[in-house]
Length: 167
Image (cartoon, rainbow, N blue to C red; front, side, top):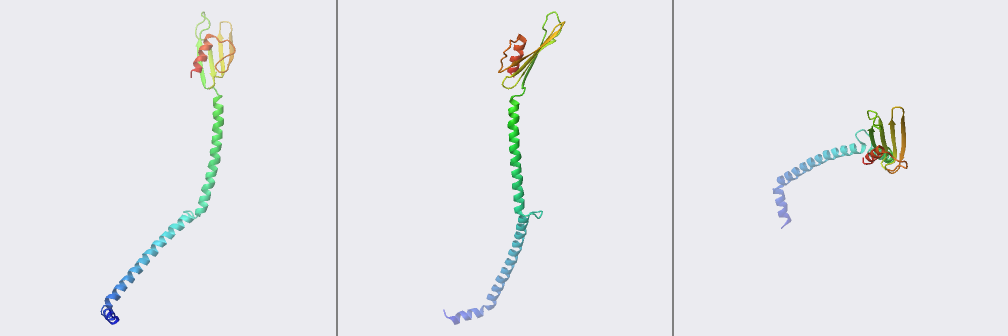
């Protein structure tokens, strides 16, 4: 092809070529404006994220959250320690209770005598028993260790001890 021929084609179609170039230029300008608007919106969202809704910076918000997390860790550790201490105390507290009322003497009416067992989780504790008669009453306390008393137990005290240990 000859340059003169290309020049002739260019001159014959100059209006079309210029129209296409102008249309492409207008499209590029519109595309640039759209991209600038989108960039502006993205920049606003970024600034909102970095500066926070209250004007606080993202770094300050993260630092505050880390400080709060550290406080929660300290509080949680204290709760865990308190729980372990309470659990230890709970195993030593009275957890098993049994009561048995009975009539100690056949000539007296009503079940005025009683035996009460108070035991912890390891069956350590006491048995209170009280025997009521016409003239007097007697109260006894017998220590229990691992479900056994070093003092002799009455039939009613044995009954209440077994009932408490079964709970």
